[in-house]
Image (cartoon, rainbow, N blue to C red):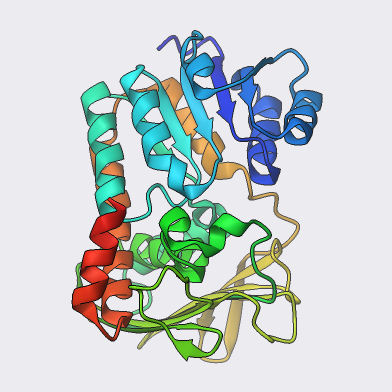
Length: 348
């Protein structure tokens, strides 16, 4: 790709997140917004105010007929895998909202399509890009925790999604674990350079009742313990509509015999975070508000696309691995694993 010209991008899905990524890419100077598409006239109108020269397409088919370098996808989860595959088959690079697929099989099908097309795939794991997180990762991988042994990851949301499809397992693939927990799993594995997950124990609940995943209901509270091959045990909890005393509780903390690291939201905010390094009672601030982190994953994808549009095999393999771990958490949580295995296979 010519490194001196702007990317030609299309946007499929222009709800709140799609518009935010659209605005950040438009402001970056890295891309021309060639076309936008959304079934909602209101969303499309708001996106057009950000990119007034963009073609207002009516479908994915129309977008794929245009001379684009890449497609940014922010649609309901059930559509991600097929839309990504079609974009790759048309020769485009793709940046997609999480989850990339409703299960590991769907994610693998997208990665295989990216490999066949030899085009770059990016997923919006945005918390990797919060201020201070790259320094926490550098220190962890440099061994500065000492002997790492434990981690705690939390994402409690006092509210639930406002769209009905989130509550349908066939459409969403899962509930709060698929929506929020995917960020926690990705973040923890990324920080430790994706070690093998040796053992998982987990529970999922819906309306305070233990959930059988053979049901089409989705969980509103999930707990899991992940034992990693590097000796670290991770405790994970996430929820929707929880009486947490604030809008959200979001945290990722990690402990070793020499130091600790903590990333945590400020005063219940969904957007403001502190990143700290701890040694005994001492705290070192690595990142704090204000921090406009939300579009950085998309910008990193665009920069990599300009530098080298080819398939990134190692990064794509990590996307599959995160999805496999989520599948295992769901399977271990279910009281009737045979029924769950059949039910989740049917989603493929």
